[in-house]
Image (tube, rainbow, N blue to C red; front, side):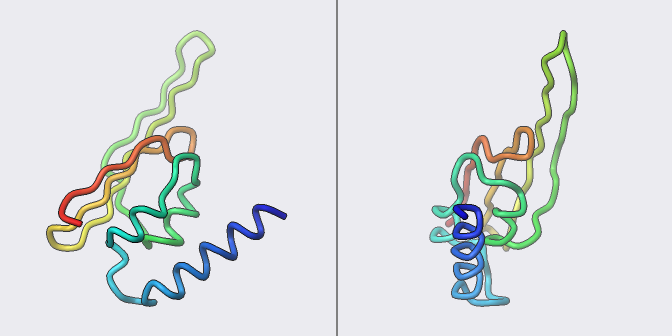
Length: 94
C-alpha cells in the first residue's frame, strides 16, 4: 500500500512540475531521496543519461554502481545508484 501511495505522489509531482517543462530544478532535486529507484527518479526528472557504470564481485560481495546525469544547459543533476537504489546525489547550477 505504501508503494502505491509513493507512486501516486510521484505521479502527481510529475504532473504538477510542468509536463514537458524543464524538470531540472532545485525543487525536483530536493525530492530525490536515498533509496529511491531509477524509475522513481525518472518519474520526477525524466530520462537520464548513463555516464558510467561498474559491476563486479569479490569474494561473494557484489558491487553494482551506475552514475546517471540529467542536464539542461548549465543545470546538472548527477545521481549515483548502487543496486538500483539512490546512494548519492549532487547538483550544479540549480
